[in-house]
Image (cartoon, rainbow over all chains, first blue to last red; front, side, top):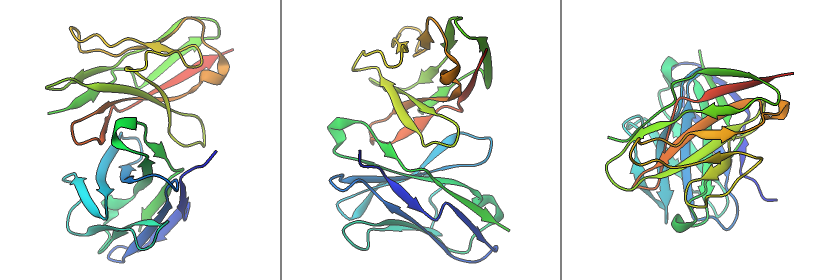
Length: 114
Length: 108
């Protein structure tokens, strides 16, 4: 069964540095998403992406954040000038089409900003 | 504003006992409600959605619009049901709003 994959599983970076989190969505999926989960807190929506553009973003997704689909398979989340409060688990998800509802989640990347 | 609440952070039951994980929501419009489960060291996965009205792994959930609830129930809990359970609401923009989650612990 196809799965969403994410790399790396754990990323440690220093405050102020840039990080890129990578995701490979399921191949025939058209909608892509990033969520984050700060330790002990709920899963929060960051951004959705369709047809090579952002379709929706939350207030968490400030101008330090960006997403890209650089090729036909990868979907990346870039965070510039990282802050301590960016430390969280970041989940990528994809869905086939809007009417299908179900979003398939990746295993997550744990980002630690020191 | 859309909001999902799950009042219990932790719920412990004995094997074979009934279990009910509570979920309440606030949403202006017709909501789509889901339950996601995350087993230890595994990814979030869809457990069930209200529109399909199906039972997965013995779990059921009924959408009660009057009480704005979508409680998850299982008549006889199993040890393998121990996991984090997230209630989620899908809003008009098609992204999910998650509740804070309830950790279910099924004791032998």
